[in-house]
Length: 283
Image 1 (cartoon, rainbow, N blue to C red):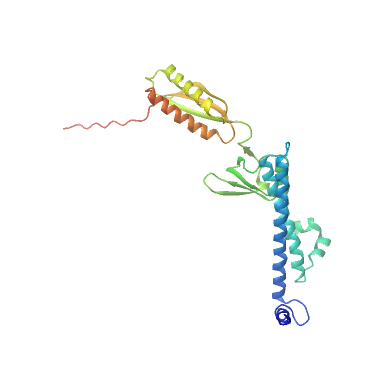
Image 2: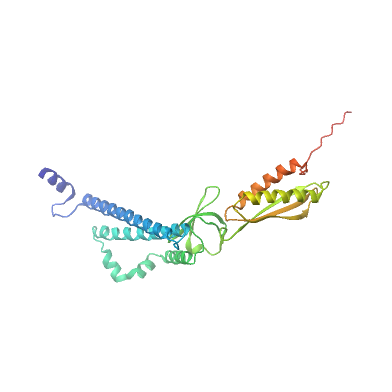
């Protein structure tokens, strides 16, 4: 055992009893491993605490709990890594504590050109407390559109429907369109030919709408047959609308279209489409 201690001393400690470069690197690695462990422990506490709050009768809902968890975990991560950074710098003679004492946090932020970071953090807190959107919401921010995947103190991450990940600095967020607050509208237009009986087609749409209303729980109001919406060059366009739960409007539109096509085929109602007639004249 004495031989092992002597070996470690020879590898990591200089003759003046101070840590050499290798010893300092090992100590830094241990410090950051302990920081990672602390982050995991505090994150677990955050998860359990928010889960208990969510289960209360008047507790926060799941989306807000996920959003708050993301923010708190980000703060937790930054705090632990900062705490780990201070002794790591001091191993190389950089007195981080004295720098903070003399310059102050504000001076450091300005010195490192972190004004944008401060704006990001402030905007992030305003977004959270004003409840502009939450994790899991379908939003449009400027030209970016998708599902909010993560909200942090500095950036917001949105997953587009094609799989792309948009990372937006919080201070760049100005106009937000939240598409999951309140009811959404499902709108379906269907064409019939000018030769068809309009009243008969509308009656079929009424029957389809009643059937869908009785089977789809995601529909809050309707479907309602509005009648003729426009006259095309070769067709008459009829419109059906319904109010749905958030994020259900596209599925309801697909269901309405499918049911209409099936009903029109059953009733022999013609849906016009471009036709090409080829004439071959024999000379």
